Image: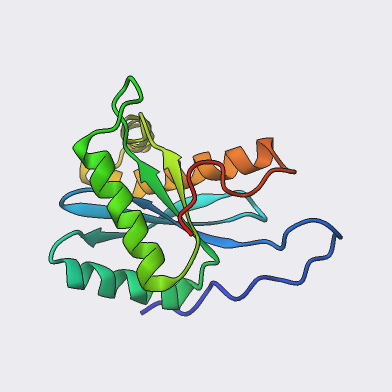
Length: 166
């Protein structure tokens, strides 16, 4: 098991600016859930793990272990929408997963429109000569990067750039 890397939020050195946060990002899928790690200080995100989606109890045991190891202050879940922006059955299941994360672990959960993140992940993997089955973790990193990019573009805004679960 990797050593703990999260740590609590650092003291704020700039008045009025939020302390840096460690974040875990999730690309929800019916079979597998990609997980990425990132932080608001550097704005970087990288693939961390792939969690089997079933059985559900084991899914949450694995996620709990990642939360213990990395100690994030916030979670980010991709919200899969149709190309036209409409909700689908997968959107509903992803929203349910986000609500379950919040309910089980008590951390704020942000949701990010993840349209085209899988295509972007596949392009990243192809350009690096990787394997297509690695796309879940890379897609989670793309989703988390989108969230972090949104924060950078709106530095005075609330950190929730999509739909928060509180």
